[in-house]
Image 1 (cartoon, rainbow, N blue to C red):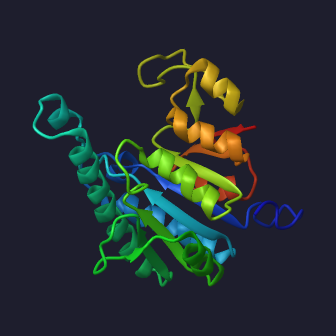
Image 2: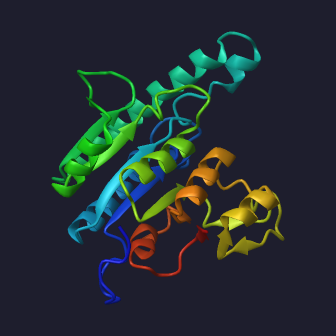
Length: 246
């Protein structure tokens, strides 16, 4: 799923996978879901659907549950902590689904964990069928396995549904050589190769996620979801954020 038309007025990608971090959903809050951010995100996705772009979404859960503290204190094991995190992504997915449905966007919630009364089980063939039918697919519960991040889940799902681009929505407008919130002299990259990300140990995504994208040659775009029209700009092929490619 790459260029669908050379005309600049048309989207450059017919199918994308959007990774929404829990932190992005929290907006200006430390935890929870910011209603205004949820509304803004659903509107941006609705714009893409209006252009005929097929959209798959993977959501994180860091705004609802952060297991590192409990794990460090020995209160829960790593497997249990990761399972709790998977359930947090389900809650975020439900919120995003309802926000899209309120905009009359047909949406499916597909879970890597079996939660029959909440969403349907994830299967790549079914996901592609739903996408071809014009429905947005929200993929929750990560990969369904502990020890894997939702970044890895996003890359895996993007590859499985044959997305032409994986987009990571963050609170910053791209990838920097160091943390821009701490260092005033941080330099932003307009583009990087997967090898450069790995060699420079840039915190774009975890190493497993980057390796997956590199192996299957699926480009990655990191951008600021809070910037007006940023998502639309990326899909239309305009300069936005940082592109990571082979």
